[in-house]
Image 1 (cartoon, rainbow, N blue to C red):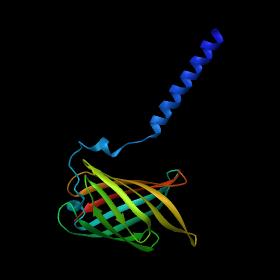
Image 2 (cartoon, rainbow, N blue to C red; image 1 turned 30 degrees about the horizontal axis):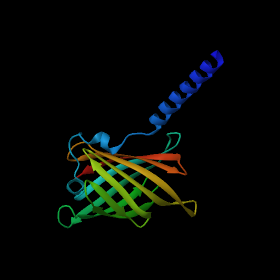
Image 3 (cartoon, rainbow, N blue to C red; image 1 turned 120 degrees about the vertical axis):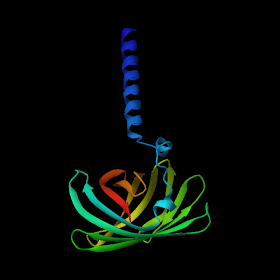
Image 4 (cartoon, helix red, strand yellow; image 1 turned 90 degrees about the vertical axis):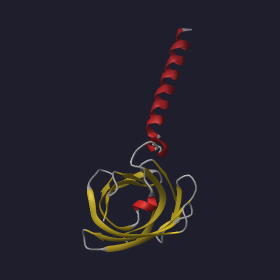
Length: 186
């Protein structure tokens, strides 16, 4: 009887530890930021010209690439049915340049979808409070071939001029690195 109680206690302890570990892996949810201020309005923030400054770090945390972005942002359509175009011109620290043009569509309840030439399928995102969470698969050129990587992209409005962005890049569920970016509205 004592052996049964001991093994039952061990099983319950293991279950509790496993549950705690899984809960810790769940990460933040967009609803966690619903009450945060200032409230983010994508159309309002991403209008006009925005400068961005960023780094890409590998999974060890080492900075492997620095870059700047000049964004030209425009919107059309009535409130609730807006379509935005974010034209991003990247300049990397090694002198190379790249461009990505996002087309964003606003849906109901702060939800957005988006497409870009180097994005596989449709990106999906949602705004709550001061935060925007954006998920997509990017076709990334690496050493003469293209690999598909997933981005879990979070943006946080700090004030009417500054937004911070942190994105985790992964493949098959394994973290490859992070992009950290600051946007500054002109």
